[in-house]
Length: 585
Image 1 (tube, rainbow, N blue to C red):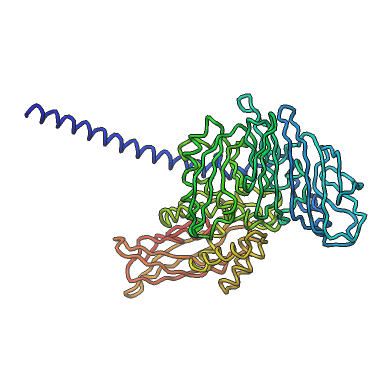
Image 2: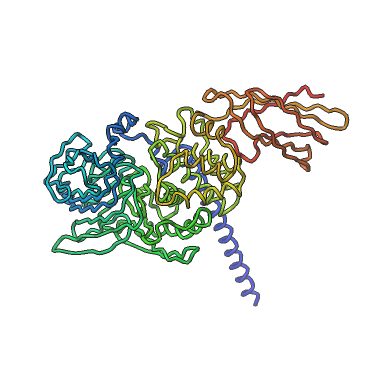
């Protein structure tokens, strides 16, 4: 018995040591992960917002003149209804053979030519308008089709072509060789869809699609929407994908490679069943399954916050692709760079961001590229909202602090060639956070749900969003939108001096506030001020409205405050320098 007792004690001690060691390792791993996430956010290590990196030279002159040439006014006289895109891929030759049919409404009976975006390095073999061969003119990015019948109200254009697409922007069309096998992927945002298929490349000209992709029969070919059919003919296989919801051209995607697939099902709040598919190369499929497995949680959270997932008749899927700077929210098929598949869920924020785009950017699209903050700011703030839902307001505050910057140049609306800068992502998120403070939580989330419902499957401008906010909140938000969206550059910069004096039985805290920023003359904003007693047993928070470049505030308290905090809950995009005068009485 004594021997057995000693053995039991030794065994218990070993278990205790193992338990303590395991706990220490878990703490270290958790700390390492948190540090990793901090480094990702602080130093812009690769993440979805690696779209922050500059586009190639094609976007350096992204301005109104360039866009006016790319999207002439004549395109506003047509409305594309449907694209049938048939692509035969020949990766070894780096060539595609295309057969595209575009059905459109013609709203101007006097339209003498129909302008389509299409890069001229792709050779046209046949072109027909309503089954008739017609003349056309070409420039580098524009195909002008002669319309000799001015009475038509519907046009069907069929274009057969071939060639090697240019890889512009982030890499609009790519043949990537991975382990001696070709993988094909597209990434057309913002204006590069026309490098690989003819289209009206405007973000607000949404249409339905049928996409047919033919490649080697050993490859799996993916696109937007629902898989309708696969057909094998000898060594070639064709996949037919169909959308049941309208899509912007920049979100139309094609991936083809030796994918393996795993799937999940998600039962929505309303009881709809949504199929989830995850695609990766064979050696990455297990890691991808682990990384992507939390999507049901993400979906449930966003459905609770914003409304039902908008593409439930189709799918939601995530596919590995070979753009190694982040991820892309192609409608119903998010692409994620292979570098970001680890099996350790290091890049959950990226997946959360891309899923959020299916509400903000895909279902509710931007009216113009001047409005892109409505995509990226909303998706970035959705990351913070997700973590708030999983934990509490401190998780949201921590997420936003990691996205703090001075944002010195440019405005949220019409950012010029800074479409994918931290200005758009992170300041856009901060703008929404401050709007939430401005209107209150109940109204803010009512705005999000109502705005989504109002513009779902369509497009909205910044002014549309502003008007909806004003209608819902019953507040005039002119000043707020001017300083944070339309006119203001940079952030609030405050120099504050605090002093305390005793007057009778009360203490008077005097705060001298001076606005220092140069990017905007005078910000007007609510400022929370928290006084904390010496024993920290008492504190009180009051709110004042700052409306001048230099203001003096006086706050009474029954105790002598030992500490003063300005904006203690982090509602303001502000750099605050606070100092205390020592000559107190």
